Image (cartoon, rainbow, N blue to C red; front, side, top):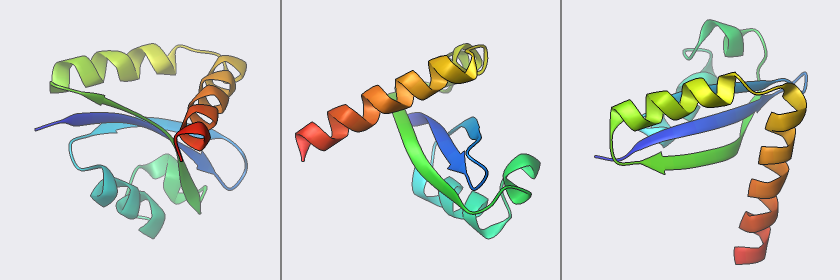
Length: 89
């Protein structure tokens, strides 16, 4: 079962990073206020970045790496991801 690392953009422009093995369900939980405490107070949220991994361990390691980045580094990663996604469509 694949695992995902994701970033959400909150209403105030902040970014939330997490991991899950059920991406759509997890994003819906964040959106409905049943996700993380942080996103409950910063709704609505939008999915802006996703990476897929084979194992929970790899996903959790990547989540940790992303959480160590500065806001500017995260924004650059999101911009690159969105540009690639746009070019694929």
